[in-house]
Length: 410
Image (cartoon, rainbow, N blue to C red; front, side, top):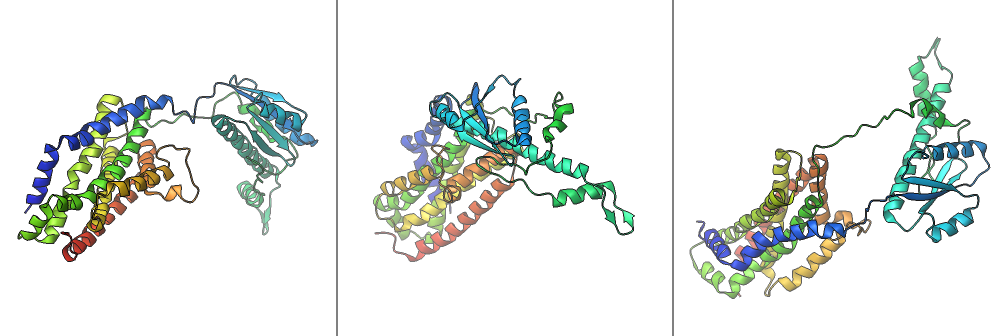
């Protein structure tokens, strides 16, 4: 009953080239990329010091006071230095000459615009800082307005203080954004003074997931997805072609084994390969290269199952496509897979095409794996798992029907 499955597994283990690409090559690839290339991949490099400029482009005293109060909060931060400029044009020239990393412009009504420099990492950091500052400003403005609002009467009585605050909050205007970062409507007084009493005490608690990760974790997941798209897909697509080429398919069709059984056993022969591809990379990178993946063994089991199911679904789809192929599928599918991985951002996370990249299957699978390993979010991984199981079932049914009815022994 399982003679075809057993024969294909024996043939796999006799083929030294296949063993190299299934067992040793993935581990070597993860090791090389995780150790050597991690030093060259610096889109988010550490910024030692920010040399920033700021311009108050308004005569509004409230905005000026608030802007100066914000800048003063960074006086004791050694990594950031601010230089005030009175002329926006001169600040732009300093920015172009790379004398400043970025320029922060304060305008009225209170709004912040960031003129970005050449460093992508520094621009991201500056945007993050001032988006946080402006959101805090808007929050304090709303809280201050709610605290100073008079109690509202309800019917014959007087509303509770909490109701008055809620009413003020519900009618408050939302912050208006401009430029790279925006903020709230103008306030009569400086709301940052509300922070004066709490400035000395830290209100931030560091939360960790109990796992310290290295670049190996990220490269390993990416490599697993790349391997089953470029390896499992093309290998499955070439199974029927290879059987035709060496005459095995004609002999099988002449045997008493049904066509459906032949097809399903051929499909099942891909199960061990996909298990090995995922398992060897995860096991070797954990034991020898310091990878950690998810925080618990249960989540790692889910990660393994999800990646295996996605790989096997890829094999099932391309095995069905292989029924129609009369030549070696490698030249046909490899360029397609490279383009697919490129548009998915698998080769570089800086590659992103809005409206397209987020729909690419490799991107969806990788994001689900990262959500699981970094944050313990299981829903994206479960979604990928369920879709993969559905694709496996659909491909098996459609492929079996096509293989049973179509002339496949050319």
